[in-house]
Image (cartoon, rainbow, N blue to C red; front, side, top):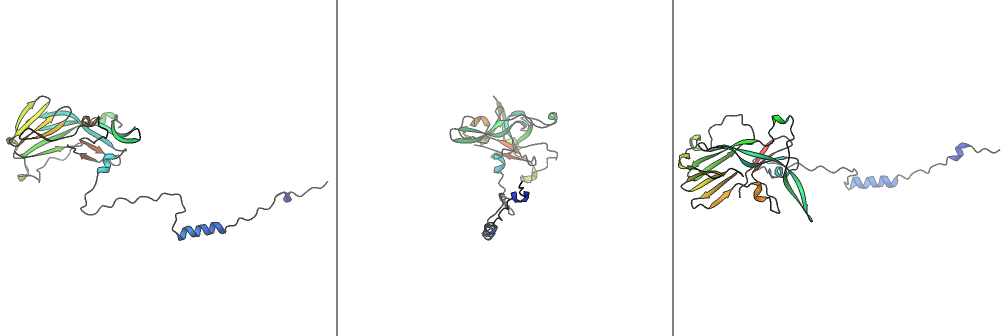
Length: 239
């Protein structure tokens, strides 16, 4: 009986030629071609001293939360101070044929414990009548622990022209009239409307209902809460 040695069954594997691979690596290095599959990171935005910071991208971020001014919570005619009820929204998408749009949709509360956070916060706002031609609108996006101090923007730091505007309660809102125009605060939906002395509308805040039937959504009067650090910025939208 002839028995062939086992080691004869294992045929030698030919040695792989490494020259093409080495040649390819040399070409990649000489041409500065990345040989890894990683995507190069994008450079962070560069801000210069005294350059205007563009925050518009925060109002189109799908990870952020948006609070839209909805209705008047309370109002004191003697001081022109009140509160605004804000509704919570997030960005979503909708498709119409070959067009994809981003729009804001209402979302429920997502904090825990829920009783410690308002799903629809009611936050203060005020209207200051500076002169017969000038008024100032101030809104808050959260709790203000610091005391209100005199304003460096005003003479003597205080509002002086409030007595030049006369208050009238109107149906569904409040009206202040002066020699050069009037201001109306609507209750629901919440709006601030500014008219000239002839009663013509000059401008007003934008509410979500103004754009519900439009093909292209427009951001209404609102503020954003960033997901990265919970900081907030206001979009004081007028039309």
